[in-house]
Image (spheres, one colour):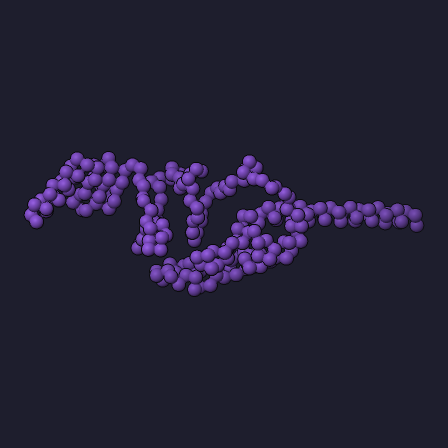
Length: 226
C-alpha cells in the first residue's frame, strides 16, 4: 500500500515538474504551456472534447452552469468564431439572440429548381399577424425566481404568427420539433414571400391608377363638350 501511494506521489511530482499539467496550492489546474493556473481549469492551446454517449445512445457534451449568471465568451471582442464554413453546428437552442450582422447562405450556385413565388398576395391574405403573451408555464423550470419573473415580463406583448395557421398556407416554413412536440416557424423564409406579395400589390395599384387616369381624361372631355 505504501509503495502504491509512493508511486502515485512520484507520478504527480513528475507530471507537475516536467509535464504540461500543473496543479497549484489552491487546487487550480493548468494544462499546456502555462507556468501556473489563473482559474480552476486553465488551458492553453487547442482543446478537444470527445463526445459522450448516454444510455440511450445519444451523443452530447454537457456543461452544468450552476451559477445562473455565468457566461461563455471569448477573451476579447470579435476575435473568435463559433464553428466555420466547413464544420458548422447543426442546431442551436437559445432564448435570446443578440447580433450586429446576420447572413444566410443564398448563393445561386447552391440552388436548383428556381421559380418565382406566385399568388403570394392571396396566400398572405389567408394568414394573420397576432399580438400575444407566452404562457408563464414555459418558464416553470427556472429555479431562480428573480430570473423567472424577468423572463415572464419579457415574454409579454409579443408579435408573431401562429404555426398551425401557417401550416395550411405555407407548410414549408413550419417544422415540428419532435423533442418538444411544438411547432416552430422559419420567419426569415417568410421574407421572399412578402417581397413577391408587395410586388403583386403594387401591380394592382398601378393598374387601378391607370384606370382612374383614363376615367379622369374621359371626365375632362365630357366637361369640355358640354
